[in-house]
Length: 324
Image 1 (cartoon, rainbow, N blue to C red):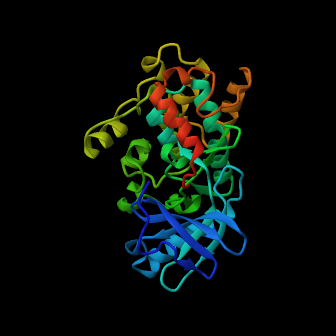
Image 2: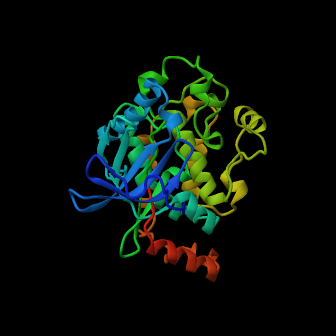
Image 3: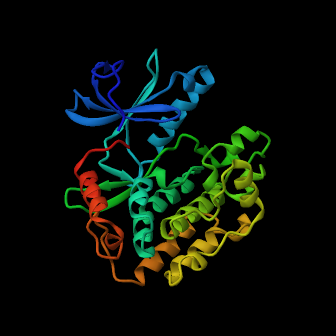
């Protein structure tokens, strides 16, 4: 957790949003816990760094992200409550989420049971399918952008976050001439066609990213891991990814088959949209007894992998509020 910002804490924005504490600081923005004095509720306020809005074009890009989210009303996408184009700096107001990112959970659990992984990811994949159906691609699906909302009874549901580099599908189909644009995102989760600068990233590249995430949750590591970006791009662009079965003997067969189709090197051979992937995920889960994932107390084997200290930490996480 970041220390409170002496500069902006207690500041009231737009006459109603009182900043309470700085809870996250990323490469492009800061996220504050805040209080909406008009609606009497806790909310999150996302404020871009000055470098993110140092030109009219860059400022517009930030606002475009907010307005895109406003178009994507889905129960598994963080809800935008307000977009303010302030004279000094624009900001986004969203609902406040309580829980942890999937990346945070993975750092504690290390390896998830395949059915737990599928259960957790299905709502986020549904959100991605909705995004594709509305004509947009996310381009940065990864565990850090899947948020596990923890409810008072300990149950969890996932939300898809961070649409900062999302684009309309027709924009990504115009040709890969801008290498900076093509390479934007998280290298570990990029599809082969993106690291080879052949595509800006369409729905099939999002499917690849879901496949990497599914692989990582169960194997405890991504399909390709290298110490340098050049080596990583070379392997993603040229090598066949390992099978999940080779990394996790005895893994659920249906889960491994879905991962293998997501990670086919040819984009034409993958699921063509997240909706196709979602259909297979749901079919796989329907073949097993239904389960409710509880954090940290659930019965499918993940708890056995937690040390007492780690379990205490997860209880502490479930008791606290966290930023989106």
